[in-house]
Amino acid sequence: MIQIIEQNRENHAEENPAPSDSTAHSGDVSVLPSPADKAATLPGHLEDLAGRARSYVEAASSTNTRRAYAADWKHFAAWCRRQNVSPLPPVPQVVGLYITACASGTTERGMKANSVSTIERRLSALSWNYAQRGGQKLDRKDRAIATVMAGIRNTHAAPPRQKEAILPEDLIAMLETLDRGTLRGLRDRAMLLIGFAGGLRRSEIVGLDLGRDQTEDSSGWIEILDKGMLLTLRGKTGWREVEVGRGSSDATCPVVAVETWIRFAKLAKGPLFRRVAGKGKDVGPDRLNDKEIARLVKSTALAAGVRGDLSEGERALKFSGHSLRAGLASSAEVDERYVQKQLGHASAEMTRKYQRRRDRFRVNLTKASGL
Image (cartoon, rainbow, N blue to C red; front, side, top):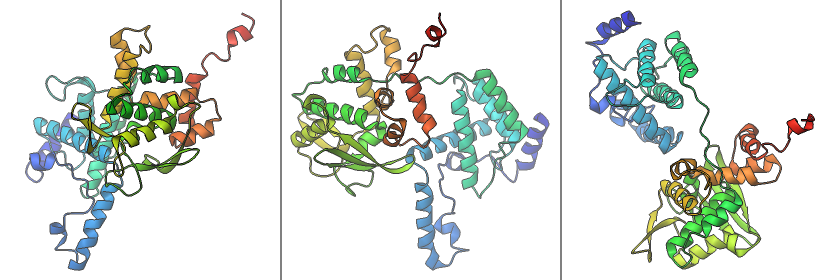
């Protein structure tokens, strides 16, 4: 492998020098060259279509995915520069050494070793970025990559760390920690309830608008009806409708909570959940960041004493925005197909992972066997 690296270094030292920061660190997401580059090959009347095609290419993946892939390419290109090798064209032996450095924590001084899932994402990012740069293909089945990756998995793979599910009794206790007399308390109450009852991802919660086609950064909108609230969402698996029924009492009803927030915040259009400023008295126009959902779940769960059997440090690691989504899936006593539809899972197997956690020890084979 070292010999191949040396050969790669000699072959590309002159014709493919290591890119400068402006290219090696680029977050280029376009399959098509820029309008200036295309001018020589495309008729002028097609330039507008080329620009629109580039925007559609970007829309094929989420903003977060593109941001992560750009950061991964930057990380890889910087490592290549330090090793005096070129990131272009794709050379499996170079990539094999790169993922080895990621797994051993030697990509740069003072950095920790990457987890297996992070390395797998970095590989996906490299494949994606190479495809955007002239349609180049990284052969991930090459032994220099596949065998090394298999060894990394065997050596470092660990069971996934699942976040603690927020159960209904936990949620009720968390709601009691919020001040109903403040706008922030009303907003946070509505976010917790709609996040749980809708089985929503944190980005789906903050991405909601009061109506359709109201903002460019929206991921969906709400429609309040007599029997509940209909959410139209654009998620990982495309557009879907989520029905949030009214609760058995106003105190725990997600629809009432949202209606109350809208009324007191005096909202008419735009983002549903916004920042509260002016010592909690003013509602701004800006949409909340999805990280606020994770902070809210964590802070209210700790304040409510959820999983009090653990230390505060352990409890802090147990909860995140995903805890609301996991809570609905773990506690809803309905057929799995309804849970799958509500959560927007592409496969029933993902839904069953939650329900298996819910059903642990319901069937006791030890006792059934006579012990």
